[in-house]
Length: 292
Image 1 (cartoon, rainbow, N blue to C red):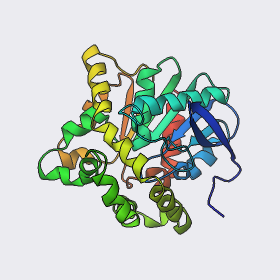
Image 2: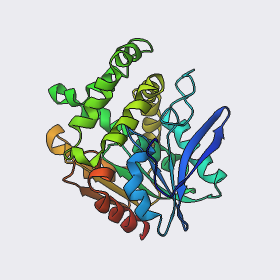
Image 3: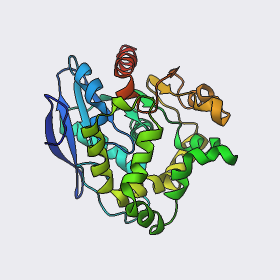
Image 4: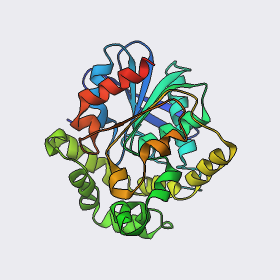
């Protein structure tokens, strides 16, 4: 049996023409949507979601293009833009009866959450982003040999064809590489969950690549337009990050502060997969955010 979040109900919810998301839903109370990262699915939130469901309605979808959610063919840059994926999340919450909700995302999910919060400030009450920089700042921070840590960003930024072929030819090695090198505590991702991540990623190579390709094009354009217009995040924001700035030469608090006037930035000591490696710390950070 495939792993699942215990005591959560699974639903298929239409969010756009021809696109439905699969989401695990549990608990009662104010709504909180949790978005997963790469190369993962909603399962990454299993421990945090179970804790927060004691006093919140917790919604954990697989993003468009990932896991058990639909994976539309990339027809143009908008198919997997974070604007489109963020609109999916808003439509999902609304279909489940929540016109206003808090939103947290990790990795790719954090980029979706960031864009949703900029595009839908009246809908997103609180925002948490785990272990990312906004797309525009991420590309600016990568330079010289230090950019080698983000080799996958450059690979999947290439035009359709080559990256999909290369990754599909050795999918488990490719996706497994990140599960191995980005964690400080391998035991935090049990064998059955790791296998589920690899199975899901292997089945979604074109859409995963399309998601990353959008972040090298249309997502940058959207961030640039907001920066030029002086738009910022209107809600309380919490950011949890490893100390990537020390390695890559930037001040994460300054970069995030330019987008988020009401920011609390925390540097963590666990690995990238913090919701699995340090679930109690992540749960506390989210509860502190929601109390603001």
